[in-house]
Length: 219
Image 1 (cartoon, rainbow, N blue to C red):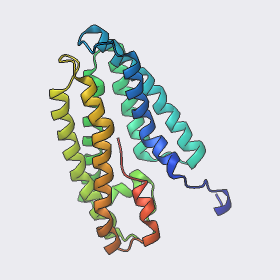
Image 2 (spheres, helix red, strand yellow):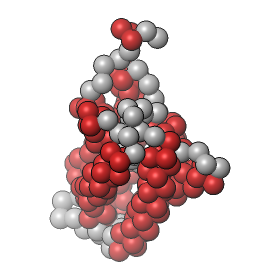
Image 3 (cartoon, rainbow, N blue to C red):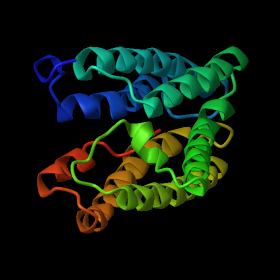
């Protein structure tokens, strides 16, 4: 593909692809949620319906990524496969446990891939993101992969704590979903910003900072 044929970069499309499906899940759940917020079968049904919408939105994001960005990163492929897998279990079994444990599975998978790459001296984050941060050295990629591997472990532990305290049996599924949408997303962006000084020390071009900011790893 020639330079003229390459798809233009678009920060809003990146945000739509990365976080749009989760926002759709939240809105769908709120729409189907029983009035009064009582725990019980009605809330399980709301989660199940919201999960089905989430799965459709995830597939739509995959298509948008291909059409608008010209690519589908391996990280997006892996996330989509797990979302569809755990989402299907949630819908078929009518058990929100599966959609709640999905982030933990994704975080542990990403952490495992990154740590395995580090053991072989390979910065797997570069391949998962399919991002080219201009000027960043191999050492910089290795350190970024290491830092994200540990951060993914932290997120996996955080999700398990949130899932334990906020779930459908105690009527607090929405708190978990809000924490996932607003809290974890904010933490991921903040963590991304903390990495920029290290990346600049390892050759990242100043003009490439925006590429780092709009390409944080995500589940």
